[in-house]
Image (cartoon, rainbow, N blue to C red):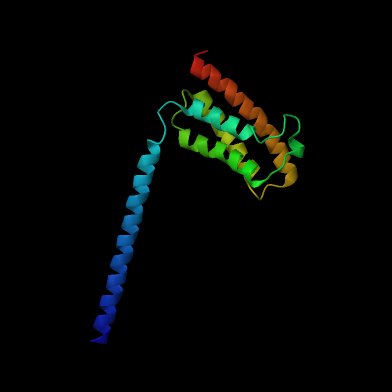
Length: 146
C-alpha cells in the first residue's frame, strides 16, 4: 500500500511538472507574440536612431573614447541600443540598414560585456561610434528614399 501511495505521489509530481512546463511554454509563446507586435512595422531605423541618440547623451565627445566613464547608466544606454536593434530586426526598410544595425548591435554587445578588457572596450567603442554614425547615414538614405 505504501508503494502505491509513493507511486501516486511521484505521478502527481510528474504531472505537475509537465503542467508547469506547459504553462511556461505557453507564457513564453504569448510574450514572443506580443513582442512581435511591440513596435510599428517598418520603424526600425527610427527606433534605432532614437536609441543611438539616447545613448550618445552620456558619451564623451568623439575622439575622447579612452576617457569614457563606464558607469551603470552609460552601460545601460549602450546596451539599450543593442536591445532596440534586436526588437526591430524585422522592421528595417532594407537589407543594408538591417545589416548595418546588426553590426552596431554586435559592437554594442561587446562594449557592455563585463568580460571585455579595458583596451578592447576602447577599441570596440571607437568602432561602435563609427558604425553608429554610419547607421544614421544608412537609415537617412533608406527612410528618405535616397
